[in-house]
Length: 623
Figure (tube, rainbow, N blue to C red):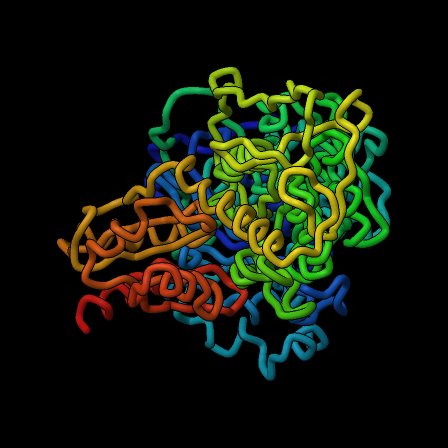
């Protein structure tokens, strides 16, 4: 079976052409849902579709099989037009057990397609999922097109020749489903076949079994009558700028951006981190980049991780650490140390739903206060926010530039959605980016470790061991210029003012705030930051097409704000701020500019839908 001729499906003339499709794969956390989604994503990217994904992990490490707590999902929106979100509602739901159907059925659009593994709808599994009756038989799914297949039975039949146990054989059912979906949407299997052969090179029987399951699912689509409402589709390639593309997640883009930024600064990276969801992918990616001089250290705890990064910066490397909100809280005292010593440090905060452990696998934007205000005393640092997986690359470079030039910690905000989601990325040429090498040409004559560059207010970066540049630094307040310990009241006031003014002065060195879409003045500005970019952008453009006077402003530089931001905001009659928190950017805007910004809040652990932003726009314009 694994030697079946690979083909992409029927001629495109036999298929219904549509501009975009949203598919949601769901099943138990042991069903390989994330692999299924990733393989469909890569294959779809090769076809030339634009896309956006949303991996939706369960919070439980290993919930009881068949329970709603253990449901894992992966959603992909792909099409021939520009794709900016993972899609409000799926057109297709693939549910590999009753729990997956129970958790996800409310998301599916009316009249959508459901593909289920009917063999899992046993009395025991139905009870574990919370069903009183079998939804495949009680008429509750009559509003949908339902394709019921005993996938488990067909998979075991397809792989029996490879001598696998029943447990191992059933693990192949995600590839059987993938084969069927490839058939429905006219996708080639070859890329997945190659991937399986490479991944399981040491276990060819596993590779062959999965390939057999993939082909069996495809053949099932070819030879079966799929039923009423189940059509075959064609999605043309999207019009995209020419160049070399790959799919990229936010975690990967951050890692590559940090390496590129360090290269542009002529520095080497030291990355000290402690594993935490959803920040760990950055550590995983950087650990594979030793060829670029990257040193990674998995510390015993969050405090050790950041202190090792501070030590590396003191020694002349670019120290970087990462975590999520709870870990950032533990790093708080050490962040204050980096601010006091005025050393470059990049702190990646991959936000998740809180407080405390909260919803560790769900997304949120609730660490903005923590980033801007969350340290003891007056301790300012730079805060940046990426807006999409691909944008993480450029924001990481900007973080490197500002940290090295201004001798300051920089907190880079991303979130669980950005970190795990994927989109096509036009691979840039780093040679085209302007270098910003660190100036280490320091005259030992009269050297003072806290003398200042008059333009940036940054102190010199003196590497220990350099003759004539011997100095000491620490957490106790320093005397202006000399760096000697000082308890003088006037000196503390002056040092506090200098640290504040250094950070605020960075506003002169960052791009002016632009309007993403719409006019620079008008009735309503929708202001966002971070991963709300996609739904805000699509919602605003939809309302512009309806003739509404609305504009989209998205802020990358959170602290300090761009110099023109206040003037820009005052050009609008109303301002609303959609955030996945209880209104944090809204409060900071009011604090800084006395702007009567109105909140649009969502703290469900799920990203905004386009329709939610559209409703907020309509309400704001009507009130």
